[in-house]
Image (tube, rainbow, N blue to C red; front, side, top):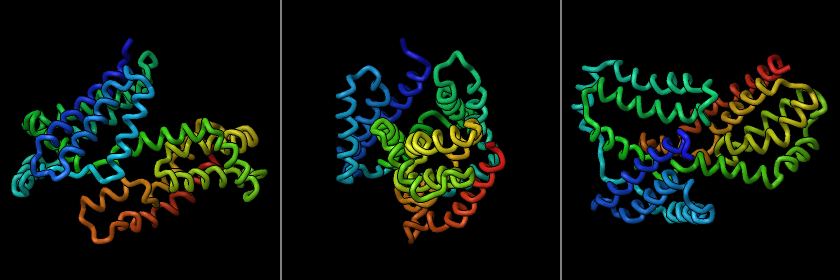
Length: 306
């Protein structure tokens, strides 16, 4: 029986299939065929992956990786609306479009405590995204076609890094199943004094940040580092409150996200979209935020989690 989350993935998949169709029609795109195949395969996996054999899904994911590796996904010819039109709309609407954006966190938060819905926060995020689009159309008096075109343009601009977060989260689960966590814990125990409360906290937060730098995403790091360090060395050994220490460890990991090229969708794509001369410019600017923010996490962990 389908769950509400299945319909969220179906909606996402159908939109990505639309992106594939538009790329195929885009004769100005020199790599329209490989781009279209990439988006079509991704759309099929999202929309119908739950009904396909796991081996087939794995092969389709390998196809996505192969097309990305040969640089087969490039932005199409869809362009932004003319600057004069965008400026006129900005002057006319002022801050009104912000309400469409605020719908997303508000509705997602409202769904979170609903125990009868499987993966309620994710369902809320999917539902709120659709609702946010509807609110945006009402506020701007624009049409559904324009929203789809803009959605396709932004998806094209992000390109293949769009699949990195789920890829890396899945990789973290694979690492955890392979027993990487205990190996990391053994290595950390030989370097840091995890016998002390503060040493264990440093190991947890530092492990999250460094593994995130390697993996590019704190979701991927969380399963490995929490299994290997967080649970045995911080929660069990020193009695830390898991409801406090785990979220702080996750955001400590995101301090590493600010520092790595592996987080391409966060750090490299913006450089390309902003046409920055230094493609590492975003990371360079974030260093001054990431390091003191990581130190702040140590303080919060030490005083709030015990």
